[in-house]
Length: 217
Image (cartoon, rainbow, N blue to C red):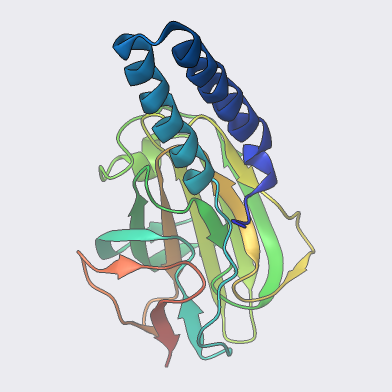
């Protein structure tokens, strides 16, 4: 049995109701056209279940490690300004999630939610550099025993809802669910410059709650 995120419940039900209705229509008519349409919808329904999967994750744990907040591919590693939470420069790792990746996001480390901010914006391509500034996004800043960490969920071309689970003051654990973004998106993680060593590079694949993207120095 595949564990799925609660945000996907009605999408999954709707997809399978349509798929089953089309299969019944194909059985009644016997038309190759109806069977083709039904087959396509069954594939869509399977994909919807896969998209909203929320698997249990295990791997390295501990305050030394900073885990990937998202499944996907690293599209950028650079130092940039982050005035809102860091008040200056920060090391940023950007992970792009395509529509086949698991879209449940996870906390990279233990800590306390010290900052929350939502910014309504555009829906440009999430892999593009300017999406970090222009697109709809939700930011969660953590204070940890080692320093500050910021996770920013960024909507993409077809993403239309960002879910962020916890409010300021909540204590969270490494690899626990942070939230999710529906249908194609990106997650940036910001780290203190000079305080961490980034272990991934552009092109690497990450698994949320499993891949160690950086470690504290």
